Image (cartoon, rainbow, N blue to C red; front, side, top):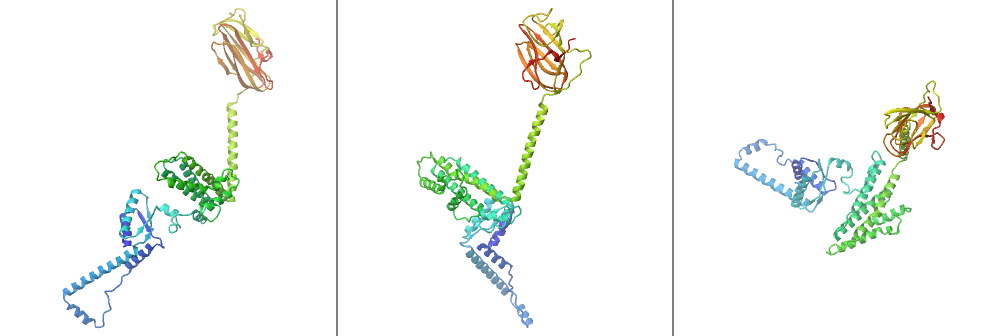
Length: 497
């Protein structure tokens, strides 16, 4: 009967790979007896013929055909009676029993599983028994190898112990414990954010925290290799393992199980009431969750410390050292690269043309803002002018422009700060590198640029224009190891012709 039902389920649901029955279940006994009955083929119809077989044969030949038909009908009735009796025996064996077969299904689909459970429930009701199957996928079955026919709820001790015989211990056990504790932390944070809206709601949250509390203490006992007795004793033991923890060592945490149970009892009494206030329930739930969050974090650290082998610690130290070295090296390389690409360029020196005479620089003066017409020229010892009137004979006081073209001498290799003060507009280039390009009408202003100059002479090009008012043209520098911005002396300018 039961074996036929199992076969029917496999035919109706092709996704079922196998149905396994635990050996200790009474169900397995019933199935085994059915299989034995079906495999047995008692030959009750055959009997040894007597020695005088010829006489028996001749007697049978004389029997009437109606008598043989009557005998076959009697045999059929006997078989039916035997089957009914067998079914009655099987039904009496199933009645009142509770079974937990393991059904392995290729893919866990809600629609298929719902229909399967409905068929199992209907058959169990018909035969007055209880069948609570465990439905698993092949991958889940593989992961639970060795636990399928043990306790339905695996304990942390069993899980950690199962890893001892596998390759990769203790790293695989450590990862499992850390993931479990992280999941407990996540669920506790979810409860903290769930504001209770009724007494029943608060009661559910309290019972949920109690369940997480039990799981947490069980994992804690497993980490410290302590037999699990009850959550209260294990909690006290765990608090003793972290005596220096500023938050866990608070006095109220020693009575955490009492606080949790009092919260549950309060809302178990208040749940049926219609009018209630819930102003402080969220704060109370938060106060109940915080010690568990802290304990879960501490247990994660302890599990990592205990389940990390010496070789793995050395390997981690080497990796950490290597990572630190690579990080610092990368930072240094990036800094050097940034300095190299962002540093001011080093400008090479050049030779002065033959016949050049240092001691000043020639300025060509023009009328108009854009060198409209040449008016005069002069060897200026410095570019350090402030004009309130005409700068030179034939040159007007306003609307004129000046161009200096020559050379600048760097007495030493190094970094120079080159500054120009001008009114109105100005342009400045050294060795064809543009430092200032501010060709517009405006008041007096100063701009500076930093250059790395090689010792020797460098080409200099500066020009300015004046619109109206006072006119300014000043070229200054700050030399290496000589702080302070000063006008460039005449001896470092060329040429006077």
